[in-house]
Image (cartoon, rainbow, N blue to C red):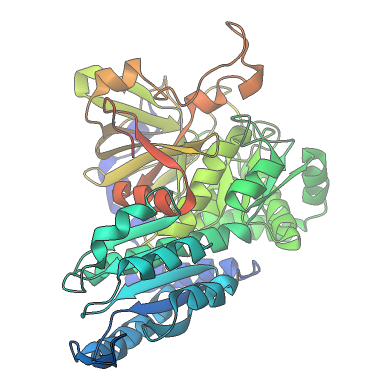
Length: 497
């Protein structure tokens, strides 16, 4: 009988952190936020804003005074106020600049913006944005940029196609929510440049992603390998009373139940987390992956807690999923769940499962969970987490540092099969048959002889995916524009962006 079946179903759905009083939930969230603040903060991304569009009167080359639309200055004041509010809402963005082209020279402004992390071009009403202006900007911009073109902002939109292939996100819309999303994405390259990753006993994954120099060159992040023996030594030095408090307050008390593990095993896992936390803070690290996660103690609770904190913990040394989860954390502030998916054609779906999952959602609510052992080995401490049926999700994985595999869907049901890892749910897909026969979309191939998987450290790159709450397909396509990776929709034929 499964763990969930051993418990009263009504009890499972009606209690736990998900059923806490508002006051208790607020207190738990405050405690988690305070713990997150123990990590060194990343610097805000600096975004140089540039306004484009002629307004008022100007003197042309023939000496004639030409009158253009006159509300441009009002637009700038309104947009400045809007961006001030966006800066406060995001909390990790700083807008600078604010020049208007014309009268400012496009080439000079592009050079002046070189010190920023990113560039935001805002098109005003009026007849600005001629081809010469865009040409100067196009070749002058050497930073990721967003071009926010508002309809009725002149005729310059006709030449935007010259920017295809550059790290520029092109928008033509009246919806300022799209501007919010674009600026949030524009933060990501700057945040990735400050990101540090610890690979315990080395990373595993696609060849490019395991190369620290390539990760630095393409994504900006630092990849550092350490030995698990170092972490175990630090764990032994952790004060036992701190480990007991961590185990009791974060895991044992909020859990729906504890089935196989002993209290001492849970405390041992909490002690390992505290060692990893100490190491991460000392090394200014935002993400960890480990090939030693199946050792004693197992790292399942450690990775779950890190993801609850808005950081990244990834099992089995999976560096590709680690990078994916970091991108999603920076771009969408969503935690990820690494899974071992299988296709169920009868339901036109994927079954997602693994023995660790985050429990804290981005909205601050905590999902119900049981504390279990690990399915395959029957040992250690793992989690069985109840994901929310009906919610949209996105499965994704950045491979080879240049291709984001992605499949959107929604949660159809949760499961308790004894054949799968503890946390289980079924995700809808668009074409399960195509997904089954084209898994990886050709982006993950074995360059060696048949059966030789040495380039990819076994099946790791092909097997794992990461799942996130929410439909992020538009967002990751736009992030790909800014960061230079393609998006391949695995469950649809010939769908690549």
